[in-house]
Length: 190
Figure 1 (cartoon, rainbow, N blue to C red):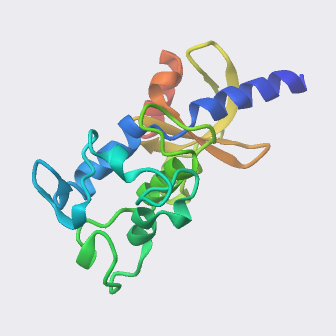
Figure 2: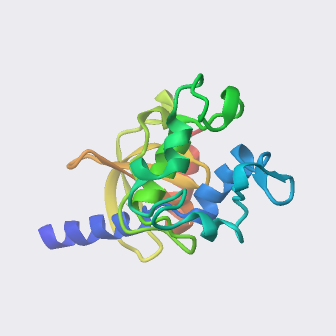
């Protein structure tokens, strides 16, 4: 029984890694491109367009895989509004707590541009609408594996599920869930 639970949690953990294309790139487009895109303008020699981003990732660069707290780009997004290095500047279009958590987890997972990393992403408590919590439910992935978890909310194209036994919240792409579980998640927010 323990091995089955471990396999289900492992499956959920693998599927819960932050995905660049569906979770991080949209943040860059909405929060950063006004000043950091070759299609608009490039301030500070920092272009975050998908084809330019690899130039910003690596040791000694703006994004250091596995080291969010040493990554200048992440740290600058967490500075106080009155700090001269804060990004975005002057409180304009600031990243939300949920976006910062995703960004931090993506970097700590390795800042992969081709898929999710290896570790589960921690979901912010603020992402859950108070009325959405509905107790422990069964969730099935596209491979037919089932886990019992509490629905914590939707975040973009992902569902936030909390495993009661560990207290760990995982972010799973809706596309990784069975059609029934996808419908269950969408119904829970109505």
